[in-house]
Image (cartoon, rainbow, N blue to C red; front, side, top):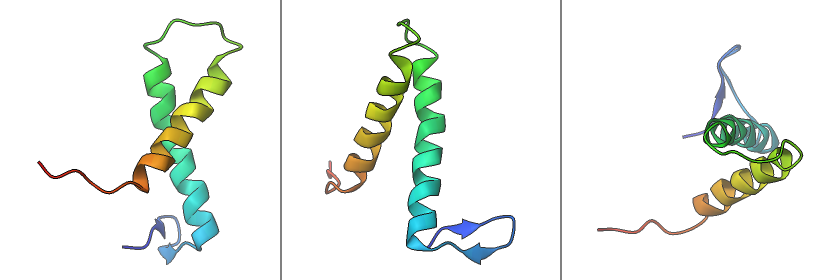
Length: 65
């Protein structure tokens, strides 16, 4: 299923879909970071690491089980 721009109901290009996916992962990462006490200077790096881990996880085969 191809991601859709909900404001116009048009399918997103691959690049737009990648940006949207990363944005959604960043939102999730912010939720995770809300529970972590750390220096504010580390938060952007941690957020990026979480997003990269989520993107990487999408490329991995699903475990059945």
